[in-house]
Image (cartoon, rainbow, N blue to C red; front, side, top):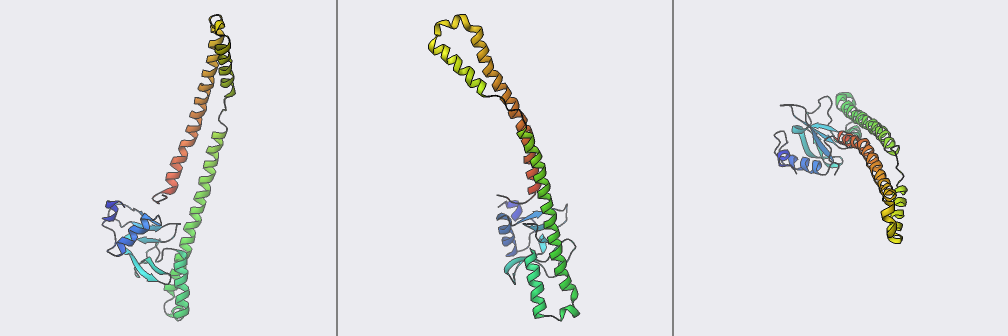
Length: 222
């Protein structure tokens, strides 16, 4: 784990800090910076919950021990639970145990619903991002497939002819140097054509690396 990350001044105190680091190392969450002197966000994988990093706490929930936000964390664009399941389980549990909340504190229930819908919206937008990525990659792959395909058999044919002369009729070589040189140049022509084709393929492939980096963002895909 990156030592600088572990010492990030916005990290929550222990034991919450250690669990945050475990989630990041496992690729289940990543930190999204928001600018100078602004607390970063802990974003959960799969485009799940979003919690301001200093407010993250490792607590017992209806789904066991999980990273959730402090009870007073209700900022726009952030959630209390790391995923939709956590929000729905909490919503169902409160309805079963404290149905009077619908009358006395409906905001709490409504916030859980808002969180779930917010996360679903994020996942939907992420799905659209993947679809756009796939379309762009398909177009790039089409460029690769349409790159010129040199006739490599010509090189083999020319090489075989040269071997035949060198093996079976070496005495004729002095009188046939121009002919043999042409055959050798034919081999070079195939190599040059392949180099051009590979250059075209490489040029079409390189943007894919950038697209993947952009798609991955700060996520740990290892």
